[in-house]
Length: 154
Image (tube, rainbow, N blue to C red; front, side, top):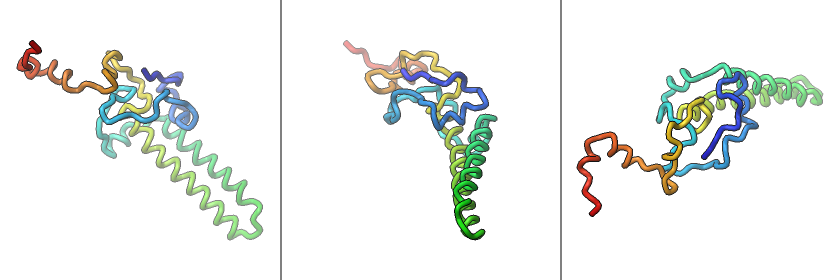
């Protein structure tokens, strides 16, 4: 069972901890395995992703971009001409901007699809993995009429 090692999924620095906090023992999940946290939206659209932005996502993006600006300034100082300094400064700062922008998309996407701590927990953790795979058929049959039409096991 994968448990979150973060103090709270709603703290303002939760998304920033994406760079340092482990999310569990397992890093790759199979196609039939249930994600470690409940799924909010199975296939999020860009509107869903933008709607799922939290304050922690903005703090994460601002911190990464701000540290990139400082780091690019420090790296560009040794260059003798202004054009060389500007080239290095803009290249590194834009690299950090794109990193922060990509994380602003990736973290909410993973939060919506259940692969990042979204503050929810599975109500029945014993159903998480049965024999290494999540059993979709039994759950479907139990909730519909098809469970009554199942042939007997005699």
